[in-house]
Length: 127
Image (cartoon, rainbow, N blue to C red; front, side, top):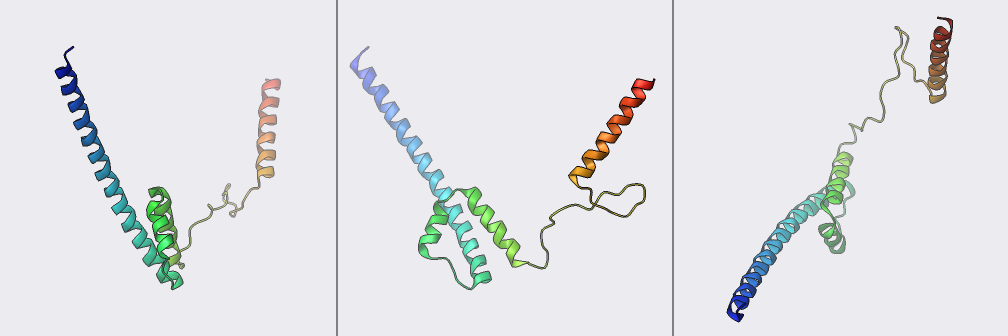
């Protein structure tokens, strides 16, 4: 191989590396801008709830955190803004044959399923 070909290949690889670095830098800046917006939104919500905005250090930590953490904090702050509508913590009790709603404990459910299995086994034996 000639040295000119190798120099040309090295130049192409160098330009490719510069292009990829530039793309990565742009992508990082876009993500950082999104994180700044999320942190500013969260700062406003926290200031409305507590009366105090975040410190500059806390804001910087939020900006540098991963997007999932920041979005989770935004959702939690939004929930605390509207305390009149709490999150649902469970489901209604089990309704059986028109009975009133009742919540079955795990032990009661296990006992009921054991009785059902014993009944099916007895039917199988007797048939």
